[in-house]
Length: 175
Image (cartoon, rainbow, N blue to C red; front, side, top):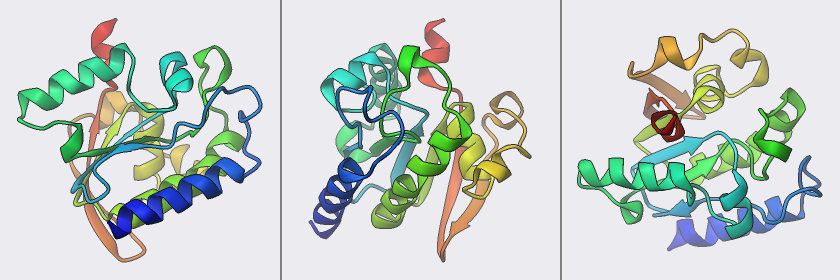
């Protein structure tokens, strides 16, 4: 339960921060799932349903992710899920550099608290951020998800080693 308490404190700190997009959002979308998870899924940004409920992956893409997890005998209680951004961009637009820079320190802290063995990045922004050495500058040097999809990469963050599996965002299967 130590991780749960640390995540709750971090969520409080995140909600008190003056982050871009906070004023236009309904709720903070911090994360959900098992705080002791060995698998951490990272999406891009909350959508409308996520903004309304304050939870990641509760819309159509979330249902798709639930089905995919079920196919490999996992459920939300087995994993942890968060996003690069903690607030919804208007009209579901792509996040800009400033938003990524100010939101991602909280994501990095989530990773450090949970200490996953595997991070599954869902979509372009999460993949490029994690594989781009946790920076916007590094993101710009990375190939897109089309080239990186399905290729596991070993990464390290402050001594924490994990395997990254870049995947298409579940919403891609809906279109």
